Length: 290
Image 1: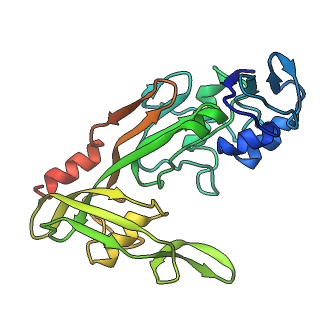
Image 2 (image 1 turned 180 degrees about the vertical axis):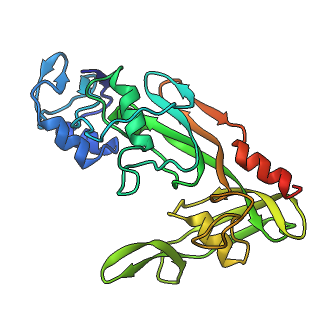
């Protein structure tokens, strides 16, 4: 068990109020309560109701959650960065982030759990930013609850090839709603005034009459946001069979989370990471003369 230390700067009615002010989730706090020894104040084991005073030293278990029980699998992880707190992985297309009916025995979550089992037998999976199965790019994994809670200012930059000619910057501001049939959410999303706010910034890099290589920034990050928004303006992503058309040039959606940055709370600075285009995406750019 690793303990995270906090020097208390003011008085609190109890530890719970301090944790809520620090934006810890109810799930984390609930798990913290389950085992005696997860919370110490000035070296003494206490419970969540303990009063805190200025200059007290609070130590809490940084990973009190139950061990993840996802079936492990062996994957050749492309690790972009790793330290004691975070693991960044370059996820290929065709790999689902989480297990599902179609990808139960082989998925990124299982690969991460297998990799981390050698380092932490009680590892709890915490993927900060999930990507669609067909989207390649950088995934951030927090190694404990506090690292997950403290990470901030995450900034993602996507690159894509879409159909049609885009010659100037676009701002797509359309609400997105999940399609629901018989009370069950479906995979597909639609543009609807009843949906959630979503803004996408589109920056053309290169284009011709048939295709455009674009850079994208998201304000909200809804499920399928880029795909839905581009399809709504008649520029679907190449290879996107759900919102556009099947392509002979690439066998999946042409979308990559190529760059990511975030403020590292323990290094106390912002880190930036960038990957190369996947080979099939690079070949697509060549084939489309972009």
